[in-house]
Length: 252
Image 1 (spheres, rainbow, N blue to C red):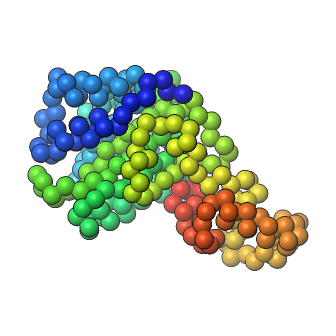
Image 2: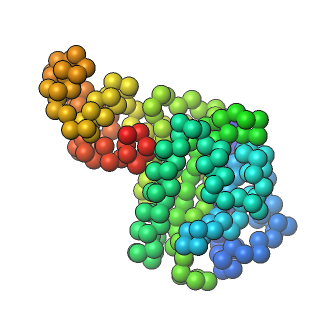
Image 3: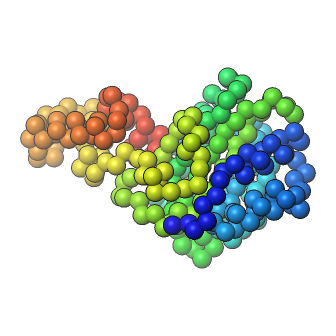
């Protein structure tokens, strides 16, 4: 596990200090920035700050250079595509689409904030793919101009071994989850078995329990038991609701 837990209040101090200027002219000698860069280095993390309306990175911390081999001043969205594991590219595309949905929701209300958190495999400077947690905090500001900003905290969480077909994913407004990564945070996922995920995929294709039973050589009773267990595990009220969430996560 990452060894130096700290309070994420440091990111709100950063926002408070540089929001009035639209995150321009950030001073690397500012004590807040020096402290931020230090904790990033100690914890194998980096951050990006973006104006979503302009689709522009306003600030990228130095840690990105050591973690994925990109110069802070040169980062563009294509770099994340280049370093993402091929098996995760579909999920990355869906997550990017989700980013603009959340940005629109926050802009339309012109207040508040939202959080999207997910794990994805990124290639490091040694060419090895490692598990990373991306915590994307969206917030609206009326000044210095109306905008939705996005600060992303990207952490190497390769110390946490995700179960097969179980990717951490959260979308909502519970900002208590915008925190230093720990096991409880990373365990937030549907926890579906391979068989349960297989059944969900067949339901999504429109097959009935009888058709699924015939296809998988199971009894209808067993299929219906799986369906009940799936809803209980996921905490969803219906299978369509779960299917929608799994599609957002790129699991379907």
